[in-house]
Length: 296
Image (cartoon, rainbow, N blue to C red; front, side, top):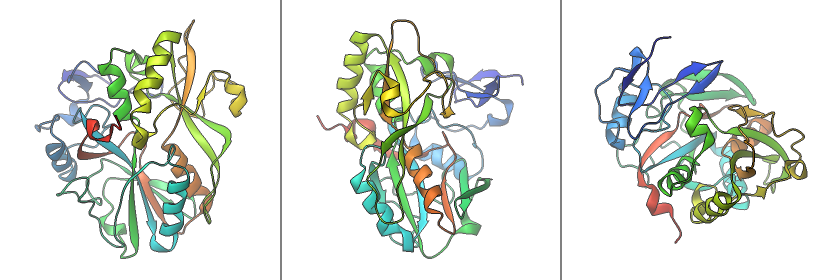
């Protein structure tokens, strides 16, 4: 596919991997995303998505603003899932929860309609993914409860602003994701192992990365494990479970952060009759600033 330079994020592919090239606020994208809207403004981004003008990766949309993972469940499962989030705040940092039947999360954005404002949604029935859709109005139910969960995009931007290099930003791929032997604290029908994402650094930069991410407990916080991946059940760090290919370079230490794929994994295991999440990397763009989530 031929790509061109334009001020928006990309979902081109190389060797089957989703790529996005970050160059300040400039990214590469396909001809299909030549929509005219302000990619730095979260309201404009949501309006473009709602209008069907943008359906791609949200990686560098609205820089400086919080993006969130999404989970939508029937009310019968909502209290148990809320307890699961409370008991496992690192993989499931709960930012907002809706009233049953409401598609609104006013604490994240006044104009938000969760049924239309993500570029892509993943639908599950009895724990099995049935496909991705761009609009869930025809699936909406009066008993649906929406959960918005913190996303690592917020702390990644803080690391970049501090001068740290992220290997997957340089290559334009997603971080590697692993299923671990760390068991989450169960709540009702929700249980299972923690999923983590890996970023690697030289020792001095690893210390800085830990310091920076410790300031953001509402977006996964500090790493849950440092080095020695076999201690958390990762047999081969060079083979990820999901995400991009692992990029552990010579002299670097692997750091593992709790990952927002964890709630998707436990929801699948709980097998509700229907559930909806974001399609990976197609996040909810909010009006909250990343800095507002820093604890110090």
